[in-house]
Image (cartoon, rainbow, N blue to C red; front, side, top):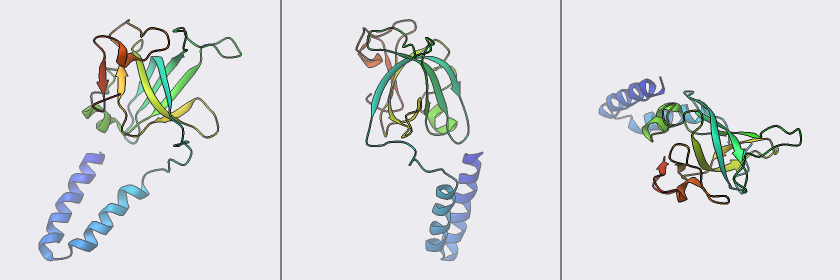
Length: 166
């Protein structure tokens, strides 16, 4: 849907450029997507956490795709909260179409996939964050976790999706 809007905007821009009003068209087009997007002020972009986890859910939404996983601790075991339950964490990314172009899809993020991701955490300390800047998402080979204290990019046969480097 977003792509369709962009295609319509590009066609409109071409028509406007031909009629000599390109500057006002560019200003109008750039205001649309920015006003439709939420602020990232809720994320602490001065902090970057590197996390490894076991995927529980990939949510493909038009505006922001999300990864949900159980957090793996430095000892290589699933982390437990004070309640004794596994600690879950969520990460917001670009829209589903944009991340799909980077290889991040429901097929590449199946339940049980082990991933490592760099995250700007929520300012309120909740277990959610935004994928940090231009960092990649490291995916371990199926059922091959990293050694304790390491991330998926250190595992032979791992993939980095969404960027050239983790």
